[in-house]
Length: 611
Ligand code: M6R
Image (cartoon, rainbow, N blue to C red; front, side):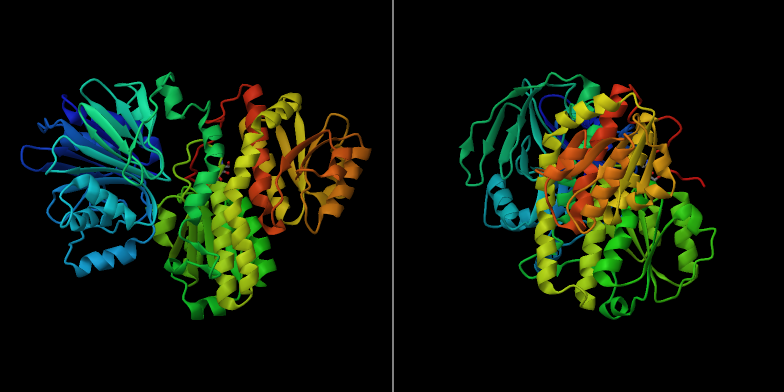
């Protein structure tokens, strides 16, 4: 996720771009850049770090150009650095491009362009775009036509802002699967990834749709569909106040991030699965086939929510690969004496990639000579830099302290890894891999169905928001989800909550149950469904209040539960991905009714960089 802003009009572009980028920093902030039309060539300034560093860099310069593009980056391909910062240019610096998204076929395109003598200066996927346009312009005289020809060659997602020194005052915009808006002003127009970037200047916007392109000039905006036909677009008037706009109208970042999960999962999966061929593209994590075949044991180490993802990983790895797997809390792992061998694979999971305990555990494994892998949401982070390979979760910046979209994308990374290893080792037959992949690809849509029921979940939350204690129970793959549900509730609502393996209840915790105790039971279809139902009956018999997470249409559970949070049916192995969603929403709404500081709960920090 990156932030784009563009301006063309009769004012100096620089302050408008810098101001806009500052509003987009929540989308990423590892490097930033601008390109502004100058008298003969573009003035291009880029730097590593936040927008404030870019602001400082240009503060002493007189840059008066009235058309420009700006970008704040969240690294996906290539480390955060000046060279990898946007805008990127063609060989002659006459075309500049800012991009948000992922170009899946960039390696093949780069190869072709290099063969035609194009010079590349960065490691990014984006840089192929200006070169591709440069190439198309050899036959096309008009920039828009060249852009349309170029994007026809691209596979992946993009929001693009493009300028050429041959067409001063013009910005071309294009979009597929990544947001881009056009802001309308008087003798000036804008483009942006999101409303806050331009809200200071205009409240009239056009939402660009997938496969549309637009030509933006100071006094005109023309939008075209994929066939090049003019499209008449609706102009929307934005009534949000500036702080609401940063959260895209959501009341809290946490809620926004919960609702972003279908997109985050799609981005994490993008280009990785090929169900038609039963193939998983994960070659870039650097595990060679002979090495994969020799793995004897897998360690997964993480903290908090990431640890819960790791627990699901253990179930998957042991069940689907038959490889012993130990998942541990990093702060415990680093002070015990784990028995590790060089042929073991060591995985850390971390949203931030900076969690001190997780990094300490990683360094321990490296000292013992293990191959290491990170599942991480920040490209240039310590975790990403210090491991041999990385699976990047494309959640985008997670701002709410309570981790939501990072968790589901971490799970997706674990499914990808398990399938990849399973295919290489022959542990997962092709047909089975295809069956799982097909179901995974359906998950974003199924999550959308759950999100559409958020009002019903809010109603349940209201009923129980004054309770003092909660129990969460689940079994097998959904035991970690019970732990995660309880963690979400306690961290944002300050209600005491315990997650338990349902079968463990009678060994102690059942003593807690009385008529005031809500028990959230994860009871979706699968091998332990009936056992879970028995555990629910036992809790019911002690007057406990049952809130069940169950499959839509399950009649058994509705007999025992006071409330049912419905989720669609998926494969049992994938059920954690759906079951966690209503639990995130339940916690969110309970905290909302208790008027808690949801995005910044007391005593917590987003990234725990000290022991
Ligand atoms: O950045 P990390 O994934 O390494 O962070 C780990 C935990 O601190 C984090 O998951 C924490 O538990 C969250 N606040 C939970 O919502």
